[in-house]
Length: 243
Image 1 (spheres, rainbow, N blue to C red):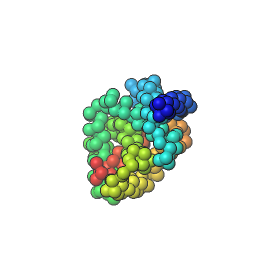
Image 2 (image 1 turned 90 degrees about the vertical axis):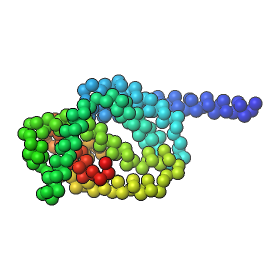
Image 3 (image 1 turned 120 degrees about the vertical axis):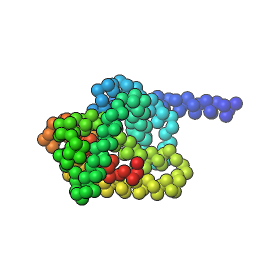
Image 4 (image 1 turned 60 degrees about the vertical axis):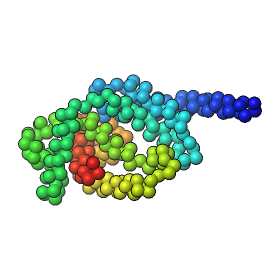
């Protein structure tokens, strides 16, 4: 009887902790949702992101193990963003033609840079695609949401905190592959043109939105979107062996 009472008390305590944790960290859900919304297509709604993020927060509260070493905020942030991105994936909002044209840009970059040994310029990429600059910029604009999303997936896939929390017995081969992937990705980012590298840093490290970045570097918000898309597509071309 005493054991039953003890288990019941633990469950009540656990539910109470989860409730308090969710209430305390609800603002984190809103902050992550607003940050993601700035890089999503117009049909993605803030309320939908918040709703899925709250589910992620609940999941984090029920599964968090403080003995793993990561803070709850770190763990919850990963779970919240993951839940939001899962919801976006289900929407399947990106037309196949956008994916196809994005791949075409990546292939064009790869060909030009292999041929010239330097960064491919917008003009060269447009010529390789046999299109004009305006049409090329339109492709980048269409790819904005897709490429931002994909770059987030790359970042998540390379997150050691998530791996540590999700796996008590990591595969040594997986760890080696992950380490090599991280090294290659870091090198690829470091080798980007300065402006593209700056945009990625301001966006992912400083968590500025596209409008704020535009004000800093002196270009329009749409141009920041294009620069970000180009950076992600350039990374895709240089990381093609990992595809």
